Amino acid sequence: MEILAPVFGIFTSFILLYYLSSLNRSNVFLALFFLCCNLVVLVYFGLHYSKVEFWEGVCFVHFLPLSFLLGPLLFFYVKYSVSEHKEFRRVDGLHLMPAFLVIIACWPFTSLPFDVKTKMAHEIVNITEDYRLNFYWFTFEELLYGRSIHLIIYACASMIYFFWNKQILIKRYGVIPSNHYVIKRWFFTLVFLQVLIASMSLGHMITLYTQPFSFLGISSIQLFSEKHFFRICGGGFFIQNFFLFLFPKILYGNISYREGVEEETNFTKIKLSISKPLKSVQGDIDLNAMILPYLAESPFAKKDFTLSQMSFDLKIPERILSNYFNKELNKTFGEWKNDLRIEYAIQLIHEGNAKRLTIEAISTLSGFVSRSKFIDAFKIRKGMTPSVYIKENKFD
Image (tube, rainbow, N blue to C red; front, side):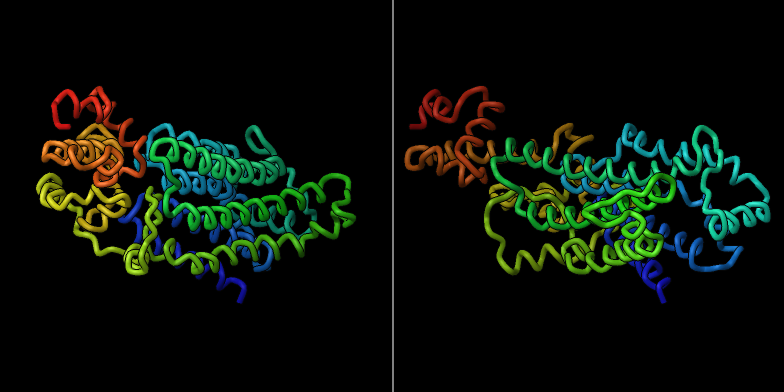
């Protein structure tokens, strides 16, 4: 029965990958992260609980590189969920180097005849428990230590990046993104479980190969016993699969980091939590022909106008829109949005509204969250403040 949990998790991973990958690039990394997590659980089961020599031979060492993908995939998921840049860059491939090096390091074992590997795996797992096999550059024992430390480092880096990006967005837009708290709870859940699992694995290895120690008055032999180790690690991954269903916006919707301060209505919350029926992205899309009529209603003048909302309205995946802004227009979505808002504000001024509206009122009508943000954006694009512009053009 225990094997059903990771099988269900793998099924969930493919659901995420198939249905939600087109909505947001970050969903691809979430699906791959869940897939690797559940494959790791299956490997544990095959190696330590199947009691079948064939599966022991299959699971021993061969899937070790997967453990070095968990951290990077978690980091990519966090990064591309909150960053305005959604494209995977070549430099990001450097995060995958540890997994690649592990594949090379394990070659002395993986290249052995299968019957030899099966006998070695059975003896090590069930009799000697001596994991000090010599690979290229590292021993197997060192790689087992390394995978836990590697995951803990990436879990911490993910949260550091999350809060660092938050400060950048506050500085740029003046507000906390409206999805901040639900995204933070979800990220904290994922990171906490990864740190718990990795710490338990690390404690088990230290207890197995060094002198026992005490933690909070509890012997490490008891705390990090093999029984507790497998229960906590396996249970952690199972709970992770279950928790996904407690975050419907993650499971069914788009987790885009949307800047805005207005309280969402119940209809908006439901609307944003439903997977969007997207138009086919096969072939060329005339984005200009689709965007220009959309802009006729000035959706950018709303404070909660975001790339996520635009993607929903036009039924175009975010990655397509993001690529259009970054590569075709050579600007971010935020820069493009503020360009439109400033032009809209100038239109309001030319229509005579400067005589009856304050600068703050014009900024609000244009979609800016504060007067200062409006003035800063105006100065960048026009080289002067709105007040100076009005006086020089005799609109007051």
